[in-house]
Length: 531
Image (cartoon, rainbow, N blue to C red; front, side, top):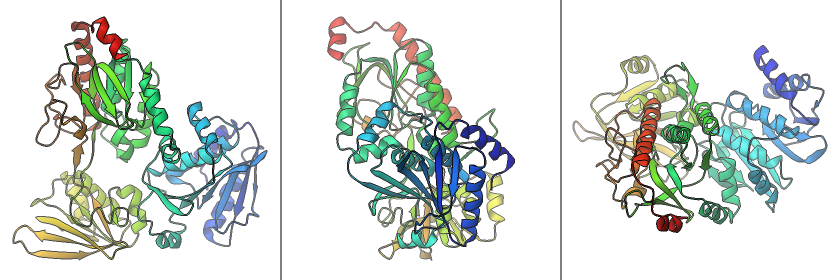
């Protein structure tokens, strides 16, 4: 199961084990069970601290438990083979079970250990899903640090009948005590926030203790990370307040145009961004969703940012880098059938539609790339584009048109997603050349129609926004408010690209530096009040 490179890497990782661990498998006569037996045997052969047995009695076969030999009450179960994107999750589970410390704050581990009650998690993932590992690893960490938490992590392709019975049509899909808990990517902090009713209040109290920053960056994507690194290097007190570090990069799969790096993937790049930020004295505040910006009352004064948990932060200068999100169709049926046939990530959810009929809405690069990826998995793809022609790069169009199971429809306005009350059954579109209405029978709809800037929280701030809701900036990344700068996909800068966002974030930081050294600091009275 493991090639020579993976075997060598895993052997090196297993040398970090501090305590013996046990792998207990539940198997049948299937091919997948034989592969599971082979994998566990190979792992056990790499370290004398790992033992494998095959006498488990779990109903899901194949599956296996990972647990510490000295504390069998803390365990995590994988159902199916955690390969592909989940191989890293498997390695981390082995290390954590064996006593190797996880790279999370002690406060997070304390919060996990303090959870009371019984929690039985079942989480479905696909091997091609780049969003799933975060949830797999979060639940693994929780299960291995609290005996009241059970986590069974299920590879949907191995248990297709179970996936169909539970109407799982998007991953990651997480159930708690038999009921749907969450759909989509979640960090361990986000899982804890949903379980711990006092988490939000504690987070707000913690933010309230912060001293005002010289530079407050709102948003943690490529632009925000670059801005924070640049201002920290200038010696300014810098804070990043963001829902998550990495931003939309976390939802991106292959990246082939990041100059000097021929290929990388979004989650890997996001982890590198976080690691780079961590090299500097930057105060990182996660799960912080901005709701309002209150401008300073005088030049050089403190701007105030309010957050959804009631907390506030202040900064002499502010860099807005809240990015953008996928645009919705805004038609009947889209919301009702989200995660029940309506999806936004072909890499994550495509395998759940194997052999079925799907549509991709959008003829730009994202839409055509999605259609190409899906055509290799599903039975048939219908690509629907509003314009009279596709807008994707010609090389992508040629590839798409060469695929035999793809239909391309242009000049088409999607007007409705239809379903049977449980899942998607089709969509309706209007031919814009003659206003005729057509119905396409299918089981899935993937929406790929561009981005919407995350700027709603700025509408009453006095900051000028474009008709599309983007923050208007000048050539120095300055907004219409003195001391407030903006960068990345939430701004009017053309070409929403990762490398452009990084450059714009750096520019915004240098402009903030120039503003701070040329603008007198607040008077003592205001500074005391701000504190």
